[in-house]
Image 1: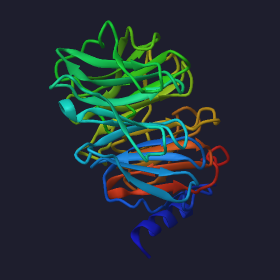
Image 2: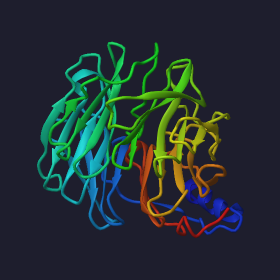
Image 3: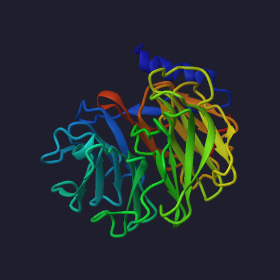
Length: 349
């Protein structure tokens, strides 16, 4: 029995009261690129992105088309935001001009370059959208302050916030591991996650990035590879942050935290499986259900982060869900998997 199938078989035997057997099923991606970006529009429409200017798209939930953005063969698309089967914005991450944005309105047939990082020492980390028009983009510090840009036209144009971004600590930065170091909720709330410095922090803005406050989290930092990599909020108050050390994918310790006051305070909430987690996402339409994932594997919580159940131990970079029964995961070497287990809101640990 292949090792991947065997691991899933063992999960089915030992997950108490669970119908999680074969929770992830491989799909053909048509690429060997490292995939880090994922945007799930519906149970049939989703987009993914990765190295070498690679973008993937499905419109039936089963078959994926591999696309190449012209002139972007050296660009690492760490994040992608899709609005429907035709419209998407892809974000390249890298030093200076390697951080850039492209947009398509015809299903990826053509792409328009729309923005390039004007700072040689800049590095864009992720973007998020409140709705189809309004979004925010976040990058590592330039002259001691994080970069923050906003759009009001679906990503066609962007402007740097007037007050510039929040002030960074020495050695503090963010991780463009899945494009989810920035997340939003409601119509104006935004959070950004950081690491690298002595402490990991989560910043909160209630005014679409014009002002920020920072709070230390229990997730360890203190090294360039350690800190908070991702956060997710089901609403303006309840959220989860995850992270760890990407150089130590199975390192034991605190790799998660939860908040019930919008990020004003954080409580340690270790995620299962133990180890490095690069992303956490809320499951749409399923209150208090989140899925976290990373090189340690993937896990689910159904109570807002208090308890976690292992879904699988296959290393992935990011996940996304349309609802409790429809989702995908992407990862190294073109890895693409679809969630095929029982609905997450119907399975209890």
